[in-house]
Amino acid sequence: MTTSVSKPTVPAEPRKGRLGLVVIGVFVALAAGGFGVISMYAGQTPGIVAQTVTYDITDTSVEINYTVAKGEGDVVRCTVDAFDKEFAVLAEKEVVIPAGTSSVKGTETLPTPRRATGARIHGCRTA
Image 1: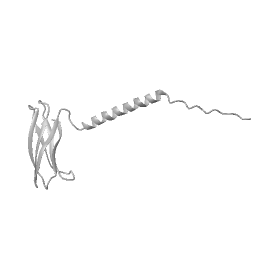
Image 2: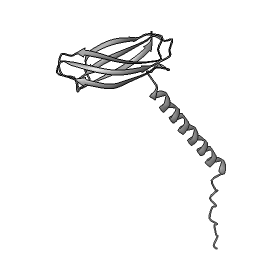
Image 3: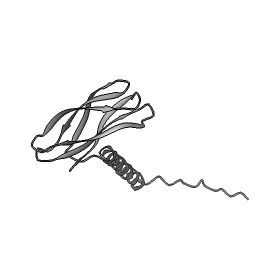
């Protein structure tokens, strides 16, 4: 006597499962984008934009030209520094941008113990 066994049917993947994966994927993409925006602005004070324009390096000093944009009524303190090829700070100075102007151009000369490879303005905050 022979018996026949029918093949088991494979249930189709429900649409709810795919929709759930799409929703989770969109949520993860939005969270990653939000985290990227937050990390891009981490360490910066909102409303203050400092930019190194140029720097001129000699064997014993660095002259840095910079701009700072800020709120007109804010007093802002920034750090200007010169560094070597290993990013060790050779010289630094705190500059104060007074209230009354919204954009300031400045120049500082930093004496260095040896030749620097770069300079920057950073760490701006309201006083």
